[in-house]
Amino acid sequence: MIINNKQYRSIWMSEDKLSIEIIDQRYLPFEFIIETINSSTEMAEAIRDMRLRGAPLIGVAAAYGMYLAALEASRKPDFNQHLKFSEILLLNTRPTAVNLKWAIDRVRKEIDKARTIEEIISNVYKIAEKIADEDVENCKSIGKYGVEIIEDISLKKKGDTVNILTHCNAGALACVDYGTALSPITEAFKKGIKLRVWVDETRPRLQGKLTSWELEQLSIPNTVISDNAGGYLMQKGMVDLVIVGADRIAQSGDVANKIGTYLKALAAKDSGIPFYVAAPTSTIDFNLQTGNDIIIEKRDENEVLYAEGLLNGKIESVRLFSSKAQAENYGFDVTPHKLISGYITEKGIYASIASII
Ligand code: MRU
Image 1 (cartoon, rainbow, N blue to C red):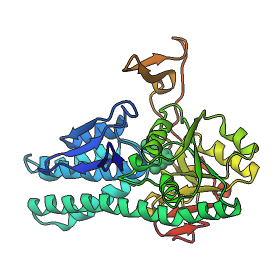
Image 2 (cartoon, rainbow, N blue to C red):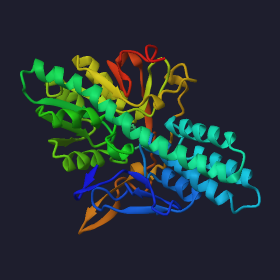
Image 3 (cartoon, protein in one colour):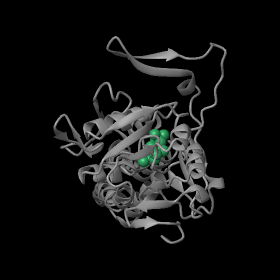
C-alpha cells in the first residue's frame, strides 16, 4: 500500500532481522505509527490488543512471532520448551480466525524437520517470510478474479456507478498488502470502472475508519454509513453488490466474519443483491463441518461502552452509557452458506466450498 508516497506492507522484518515492524492500527486514521516488536510475548500482546488485526495478518504475525521465539529460545536453557510455550501463547491470542493456527502449523512442520537450533531459526525465518509473500500474491489474485464480478455489474449498468457495500476492514491493513474484499474493488477502480463504496462503520472497534482511510489513500470514492443503514440502502436500490472478508470458513461454506456481517447478508438476500465473501483458502477450516462449531471471540465490554475519537488534536476515549450499564461484546457472527452467492479466493471464484476441496 502507498502511504505518504511510500510503499508499505502492514508487517515486515526489520533490516537487522532481530525484530518485526508493524503499522499500529489503533491510531489510524489519525496517526500513522510504526511499532517495533522485539519479542514473541510482545507479538502476542500486539495481536490480542489489535495493534494489528485481520485474519490473514494475524496468521502472518504469528509466524513472525514464532521466528522471534526461535531467536529467544537459542538464548534459553531449554530451547524446545520456550518454542512450545510461545506457540501456545500465540495460538491463544484470538480464537476465531483460523489463519492463526494455519500459520503456526506451517511453522511447526518446519521446526520438526530441522536437526539443529541454527537450522530451526533459518527454517522459521524462511517460512515466515514465505507466508507473508504468499499472502501478498493471494490477495493480488483475489483482486484479479473478483474484478470480473464488478465488471459484469458495470456492463449491466451500462457504465453507471457500481455501488459496493463492505463491512469491517478487509483491506491491505487486514492482510500484508492489497486486502481481500478491497482487492477486487481496487482492481476495478484501476480499470476505470465507476465505483462508490459504502463503508459500514463496524462498531464497536470501528474498523470502517480503516477501510475509509485505505480507500482515501487509493482515491476510491467512499461513504461511511452507520451499521444500521445498509438494509435501507439495499431496499432503495443503492447497493449493487456486497463483498466482505472472512475469519473462518467451514466446509459447509458457513462464514465467520466481523459481527454484523450476518445481518447484511440477510438484507442482501431479501433485496436480491449478490453477497460475496473474499478470502484466501488459508481461511477455510477443513476440520470443521459447519459454522455452528466456530468459536466466537468475546472481547472486553469497554469496547462497546466507550468510543474513541479525535478531540482537539488528541485521540480521546469517552464513555457512551451510564456508569452502571453493562455490555456484551461478541466479535464475530456466522453467515450461513445459503446467504452467500460465492467465494472469491486466490484460486478463482467458487459457488461452494465443496468445489474448492
Ligand atoms: O477483529 P478483526 O478486526 O481482526 O476482525 C477480523 C477482520 O478483519 C474481519 O472480520 C474481516 O472482514 C476479515 S479479515 C480480512
